[in-house]
Length: 323
Image (tube, rainbow, N blue to C red; front, side):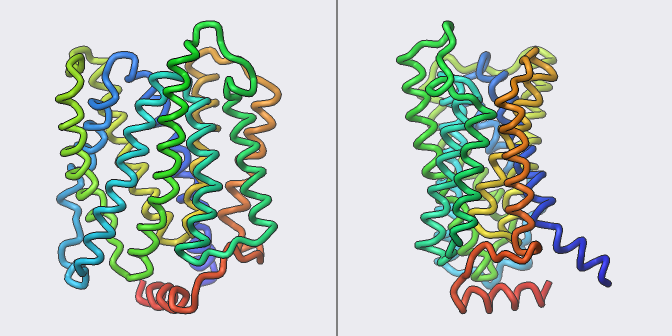
């Protein structure tokens, strides 16, 4: 029994590593695909892949959902659809490193503030320092051009557009975990219900978006099809891992785990795209990975991440007992 309890206590770490890694893989696939396909098309593919989880929807368990829960589901769908769309747009105008540094670095701090106000997740001074250190690590790995210089091939005006998209995405990326945690506290969070609704809402919005862009096309080569399928699969797996993590961890834990994606992106760039290893980036990798591990194991190490309200604690305990 003690071994089982130990494994259960490591679930936040497992989901953190899985979620962050999948976000990194998906970001690099998007960077390759955006060279051929429009951002609206990639966003549509993401949402279509999520709709394919419809057979897994937990219909029998949704009888306790209310109109308020449905509103929370719809709100969560819209708030995660926006950063998915803006990420595809931002990497079209600038590098993955710049986009990740801005979007994920900003989201960590914003989620901490919103989680404190809305979810009563009171972050300790030590944990706030961890957030700041994590942001520094992300910056060192991504080495954004606004700090480390612009490549000669980059267009300054286009890059500014990418920055705007990244900042917009970071704001909504920070809000999304709040809605998921609200559903968790109400014991009405169902993973595949959320994914299917996100797919349907997203396909509708992305479909409208596709009609505005006239230059999009469907994949015709084997490589394009392979990348599209991998992109869709990684998106679905990423969302499952993200929601599962929010079932066992705070909103800020979920956001800080995304920073791991910068590490995965950097490793993939070195492995497949002839990126040269950089001492600053390697130090950043160590910092980010350490922060993700410490964040996921914070309570296990005897340091409480946050203090939720009494009603939320009771709800969480009841939910754990039922599980």
